[in-house]
Amino acid sequence: MSPQWIAVIGTSSLAFALKYIGHSVPESWLAHPRIQRINALIPIVLLTALVTVNAVTTKTKIIFDHRVAGLAVAITALVLKLPFPVIVIGAAVGSAIAYHFGY
Image (cartoon, rainbow, N blue to C red; front, side, top):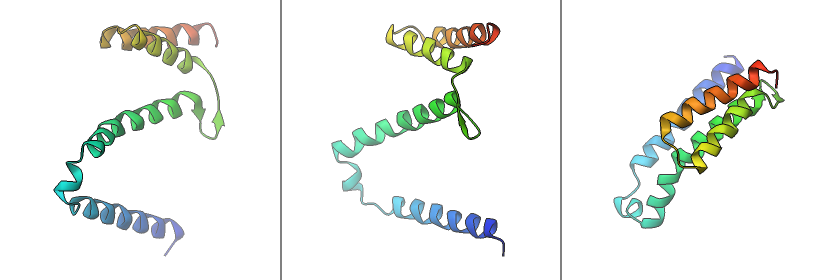
């Protein structure tokens, strides 16, 4: 068996075990207010990490290109509490302008 298949089977088994353990957690533990606050923040943290990694990396290199300009526009629009469509369109336009001018 190749190392890739061992890795696939191992990670699949680990994912199944974690999911099974997650379903076995008592309801009283999950009802704790601190746990609920943490669970509310997990999707935000994961999405932020995904956006950041996609914006500043290409394969194995860290780069700053037009995507960072779009991200900066989006963050500025978020700070100004603009509507979501304005944030998305602004980020796209900011990224396109930076790409056009070669940043």
